[in-house]
Image (cartoon, rainbow, N blue to C red; front, side, top):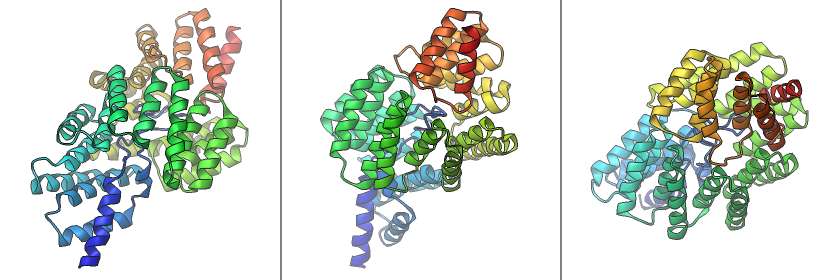
Amino acid sequence: MLVVRRIAAGAVVVILAIGITLVASARFGRQFEQSAGSTPLAGVEAERVGGRDIARLQEHLREQPKDAVGWAGLGLAYVEQARVTADSSFYPKATAALDRSLRVQPDGNEPALTGQGALAAARHDFPTALRLADQALKVNGYAMRAHAVRVDALVELGRYAEAEKAVKHADVTKPGIPIFTRYAYVMELRGRVRDAERVLKLAAGSATHPADIAYVRTQMGDLAWSHGDVAAANREYAFALRVDPNHLPALDGRARVSTARGDVAAALRDRQALVGRAPLPSHVVALGELYEANGMRAQAKAQFDVAGAWAAIARANGVVTDLEGTQIASDHGDRAEALRAARTEWARRKSVHVADALAWALHVNGKDKEALTYARRAVATGYRNAMFRYHLAVIEKSLGRDADARRDLKAALDLNPHFSDLHAPLARKALKDLS
């Protein structure tokens, strides 16, 4: 019994040390522009949690059912498993475990409050995530995970000035890789790319575990990729995969690099492997767009259908999927439904990613004059995003604002000439036509 308890306690410590991936849709693949906001919400060590850890916790809790920290750890582990496996059926299990933790310890239960915040964020209920993070921090102002949830929620709500203030406070209060990577992303969103690079380099210097190293180096690769430096991105992704061959975000990055270099066969192998191992909507849509860009329309449609099915299952498990649904449907589905979902999501939160999604949904529904307002809002923070700039340019072109369209098409292609398998070639053609 004592041995079992020690093993289980170790599992609890590992899980509660996680700077967990708090929003399943975040880092939704820069090529797809990551639905809920490309936030590096992965918490680095979260990759270490798996079925064996869950089994250990379950065994421990059968022996010690009044262990509130154990129940909170199990809830967090379920949230992480949902992210890793793309299986949203883990969310109801997480709800039950976290509720059990609070029944065992109703007062002062920071781990359970933070876990509930993480779960709310994973389901894209960011106001609730923010409220729960604030409650957790009142109990323990040094809780790194609660600080991470709070920053993530503010970012996803589009409250960027508050997010910057929150991440600076977290960096002073409880610095660590989960905070460093969030700090870098907030800087990037506000157009401060050099500051983002500097912070990520500091994070890389402090990382020691292979999963941490792979995570940070992938973030560095993503930053390089988003600004068109294919060679630097390739170096970072390769480094990450040498350290941790199972790090899927780095595999996703390598697939993008292969496409940019014209090695479609290698890109297809990596994309098919990603979908086989983790059928997240970002992976599924990226594979579909790669198929479509190479004339494989039937295979592409099958992937887009899978992405739509994922959204339906996720909704059944309490996930708000309007942003993902909008991004998929605007290019690959029911355009009227895309606009409905985009307007619904904009009513909830005012992030740059939602502004861009709403602008594009308006455009594909022929409402370019209204779309222009939101497309401009998407780029107003200084965030250098090639897809956003391309969307703005297409809307400007549709309105006859040719000079503006030329400027923004050039800006998109200068920033990253490989920003999308489908849209980058269209951007080059549109710029040529306008010239």
